[in-house]
Length: 339
Ligand SMILES: [Zn+2]
Image (cartoon, rainbow, N blue to C red; front, side):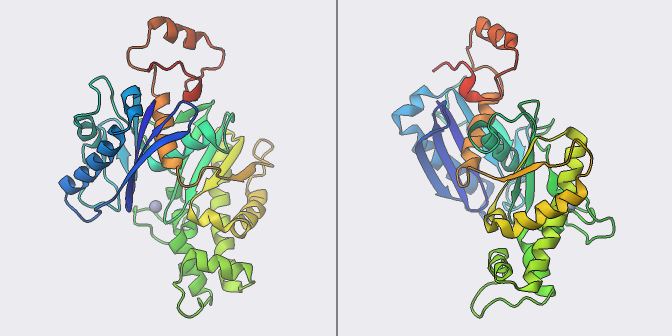
């Protein structure tokens, strides 16, 4: 049984997840995003209390923690942009201190976009795929990589950070300090802002969001369409660059902006045909994410499952895994799990 936490700017979600990726119990608490570090940790403990009250908690073998980034998986610390009281906050150490977390269980930290990639690979659109880029296009743009059939999180857990790849050397400054980042074109707020600059006017009483712009684009509004075209072009440039670097088999895109469907995917695929022109990058499939709301939780569990053999596993099991022609540890469902 896997335990999973997903810590975001609005809510802290928890779940117990079985080895097939099914959620068997849930707990949730609002994130006191403007609260103190202690307030935030109390909310996390509240969710852990809720999970520990289920009988299935007694079968816990792994615990994964997905968090809004940046994260540092080496130090087990998080500094979520939307949670100001946590800067280099030792989240792993604090989760481990919960009285009901068994002594042998080491929480596995993962960034939320990397978690999404792990989730889609385990139980979603990238299942069985060897090399995939999974992206979240929402209020920001994030991503994670599956390479050689395994989650590639990078040394500190931040690999796949595609939102801050420069696609326009002369583009607008990004809060990260660089110029012309993908996020400045393709994130929801950037799409809404560009639609407004291009002459789109939201209907009276409607907030100028990317979702409202998508509705207008579908109705033919030229300003809104221009904003989605620009977003699709930026995403296409970054995807083509990634495909050229690592040879992708699939791109999966989720997040709020991806809910606009063909309004985003249409221009993205058109521009990708112009950008991904090498023999090995051409005709790359771009698919919508399959796991929407629970991707963070499922990904936290998947990442925890991929982190190595379960505590107390017999050496023989490890040897067997090592002898497998294609290492199965990237799919927690396939690993031999103690209970
Ligand atoms: Zn940036």
